[in-house]
Image (cartoon, rainbow, N blue to C red; front, side, top):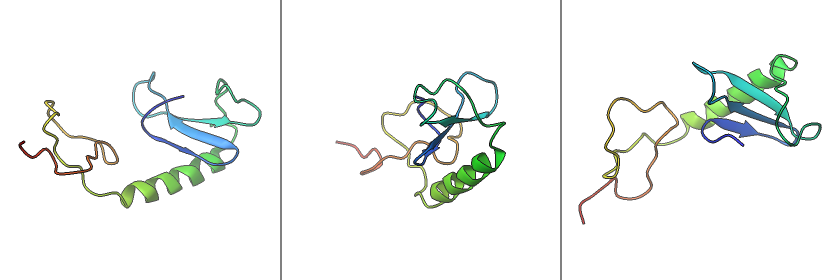
Length: 92
């Protein structure tokens, strides 16, 4: 199972492929393919569009990304990634 961007409902699981360049969404039918091996995104574009819309609406409700004392990287975190619950890296 992939980590990162994903959404699921009773039958389908939508996720971003971590093996491809760019952002490629994959859709798996959890009833017919519980091992998540057969990408059904091309066969069900309306399901992908609906689940992406729900995913994007959910991400829009999340609080802004907070800096972390443990994060030593730089640059920009994509919207929907990197939340920290707590003090935001305050000194001990």
